[in-house]
Length: 316
Image (tube, rainbow, N blue to C red; front, side, top):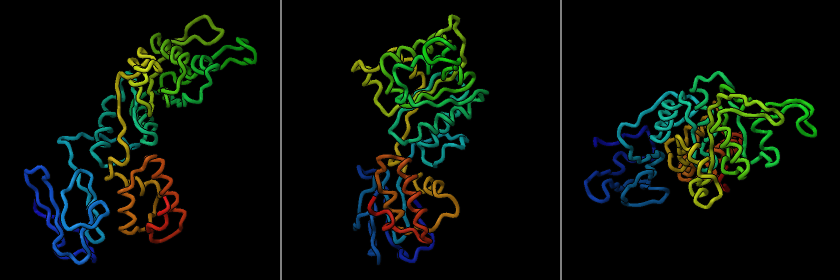
């Protein structure tokens, strides 16, 4: 370790703190060297501390993030997925490697972690000539599920004045993104399993199956395996959907991406911000992930201030 040189920082002492690395149980230690403005770890002033993965250190008006990275993390150019963290680089590489396969993909993660963006990235990188069709499974009424999935022909039931293609026909040669797959009823799960096994659909009122070439990507913030064990979700459908599983990392676990994502959400030019606002943003837990970060960006932009400071969003 040859030392950490900060950008010009008027509040940092010339030799502010010492970082030591050892083979002990707490391998990285930091100690204040009687600096004028003190040493802060995760927002708390301290004389010395053992540093853990993800800790935020503030020296003067400079912020440092400690991150242990696994070796040889691959990356790939996937423009829709921003970030410099190992988790995000690994996700880009994984998406690039599987995008052109026909396997079903199951995206798992908390609400707001970017499952929809990952589905769009999979489609964009797939080379498929058809459309990306997105549907919220929680918004499909059970009584209309068969018509939604398979479509219907004119006159097949009361009110069916015209023929209408279903979701699978609309996504032919493209990608069907089934968001909130865990919300499907037992009947809808059975309908979905049928089309995944047959790779064809029979519209309501028709007698001849229509082949469909569709890449299915599903997403949920539920623990589907637990739902299977409880008998809430079909095990055979889960086995189909989980051919390839991608897990989305919550925002609080990839702090090195936060300010980059905030800058992207706010647009250009982005006003300067104080160190205490940047520190608060980095330490916040973001229970609603990227959706919440985007809302904070909107609030900061709407303030119209040339220098962004913590009081602007402190109540949040």
